[in-house]
Length: 176
Image (cartoon, rainbow, N blue to C red; front, side, top):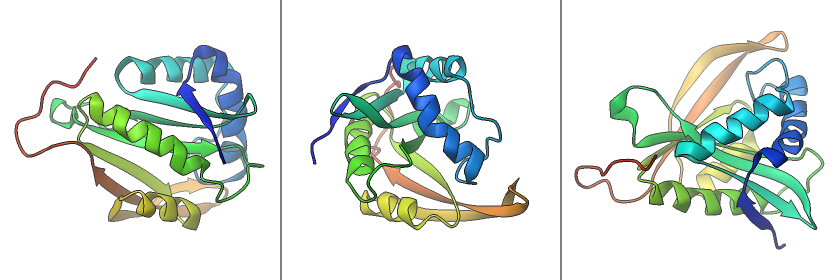
């Protein structure tokens, strides 16, 4: 299947918010409990585009997914690490390759910006996300047990990590 992937803009905020809302309302995949408004999503897109990246995937002109990188931790020594996430419209065909396509566009972009370590937090159980991240070279680095309470249950979060770019020497400044 062929996808068009491009940088997100504030014009994509309402669609991204609509894609994300069912994950917030109906699952523990995200620990947010109230779906963000389109205005909030627009601010998130803008923030991500300043130092990281936010991409959208479209098919036949309709945005059906997005992926982004964001700050992992605020302390200076973490500057070369970022957290990544991908979300697809809930009615999107499973195993269509859309998540992989988004990440395959996002990861080199983050490497070009100077990032060296990517992290993904995955609420368990989530075999599809674990499989996607494993297929893209992410390795498990630990599980936070019973770390989040949502939908009347405690949830574990598995963390996966992947190196990108050359981290054999002193890092260059991450592009702003």
